[in-house]
Every structure is written in C-alpha cells, then in structure tokens.
Length: 360
Image 1 (cartoon, rainbow, N blue to C red):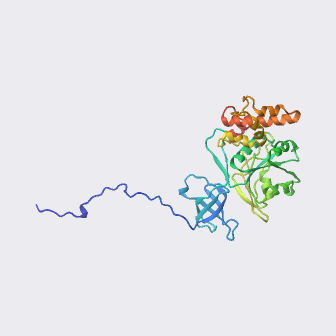
Image 2: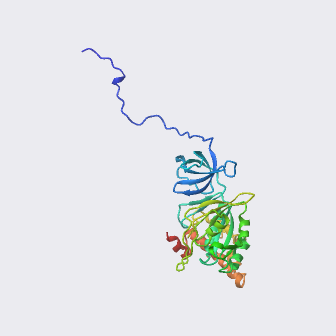
Image 3: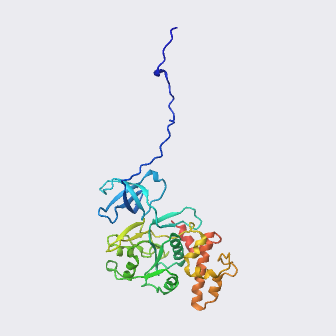
C-alpha cells in the first residue's frame, strides 16, 4: 500500500482555553476630564465636569467596571471619559476616584461590620436638630460629633424651631466644647416663611463644603431650600402620634449655594434614625468629647473611663460640681459612657434609638 503524505489538514486541535495570559494593562485615560460627583441615582452619577472652570457642564456617568465595588459618593472628585457633553442620552464613564480629604461613614448599628460611606471631601458636618417636634436627642448629636471627629471634619450644630422651645440648654451643653451652634426659627405661612438666624447659618457655611445630617422632620430640606432657592427639596411634617418625621429626601445630593467668593456647597442627606459607629476605634471616642478629654488627662494610667473604672477623674469632675452644673456634667459623662459601652458591646444602646433603627 502506497504511503500518503500528511499535511496540516490532518492535524486536529481540540478547542479549549488558550495559553496566552490575559493582559492586566489598563488604559491610562490621560485625556480624562475632572468632575465633581453631585448625586447618585440607581447606578447613574450626576457629575459636574470642570467644576468652577470656563467649560463647566453637567453630565451623567456610570462607574467603570475596573473600579469594582468601590463606592462613588457625592463630593468625590473623579476622572471621567467618553461623552461628557451632557447632551440628552449621553453617558460618560468614571474611571478613577481622586484621593479623598475626608470621608464621613456610618454603620447600621455599633456592631455592624459593614461601613457605609455617606459623602467625601466635606469640610464640616452640620447636625440639624429640632428643639421640638421632634424632640432633640443628645445621644444622636454625640454620635454625629464622634463620627465627624473620626473623619477629621468640623462640627456645626444647627438648632431649628426655636419658636417652639428654648435653645439655651443645648447651647450651654455644646458651645463650651468647641461645637459651633447656630439657632434658627421660622415665622409666617409656608409661601412667605421667614427664617430668623439664617444669616448666621449662611456665614457658618460660607466658602466650605458642608454635609447636613439629622432625623427626618427636623427641617433640613427647609434650610436647603432657603440656601439654594432652585433646589426644590421636598419638605414634610412630623407624625403627631409617633413623633417621627417622614422621609422626604431619598438620596444625598450636593448643591452649590449662590453667592460670590469661594464656592459654597451643601450636601443634603436623607433623614437618619440611627448613626452606628462600628467603624470608630473606641480609643478615639473620648476625643469627640473635648470637655471630658481634658478632664481625663488626670485619670490614672490604664483607666478605661467606664463606669466601673476606679479613681476615674470623670467621676470626681461630676462630684465637684453643684446644682444644674452637676446635672449637666453627669449627663455628659453618662452620654459618653453609654456610647463607649454600646461601641464595645458591653451594654444595650439607648432603647429609643434601638427601636428607631429597627424600623425600615
């Protein structure tokens, strides 16, 4: 039998995975535009391209796949590529997130390991608290102060509805420890409402990026609408039975306050019912209570400042006072120790806040 010459047609290669390694080289996107994230809505990001520049424009973007699960939040400075014209139907792509100066985080409770980034690059946290309807909750204020301290942000306490209650007690509690306090009250019908103390608030925000945090119904959206007339943030009322406000803001949004000089931004956030601090090192909590931190310098070495700590200087500080001053000091120490115990998991947190955080 005559032999046959073999050629390439006789070769059979089983299809399968190739041996060529997948490249990990990513495009540099050297032509990317700088943008400021102003809002997030179901996977789409409202961005301001070239913020403050001659070619400033608004656009919509999505997050590039290579960013993975890294969260993009209002206040982020990002690099965008693609269609950044902002025309109807256009969609850009966020390819890089800039370095963050500050990051405000919170968790669902003091034991939740999952952190939620709220905003980035804010200069100060504005804790909006109603003096009545709903009633103020000092432990919520203390939690926000601790979160701001941990994030490296300044704190401004904005007390609203001073027409319903006297602000003196809260002012006396927080002003001496370095928390700036502004007080506002409103008069007149909704279509002709006048906010007294508004100039003080505006001056405290001037030239800075501020994030507003507070329970629903405390007046955050009312203040934002006064600061940014075109914002049209929805406002609501407080339930007469439960004493809780109804959520009117559904997502965080950054808004530029009209005016001259350095740009002023406010970031309005949805109302919160709890502010978990699982991400905060318990050793850093005392720093958020400036008055107590100074007193604690006299504590013996190794003092935990808890209620069962022997010879704790905080107990002597309370015992040395009289009358209303003693009551105020005792309330401060109790608030700190309850917060510390809640963070360490050694006792239950404020029952009222626990009930609130359990609700959707």
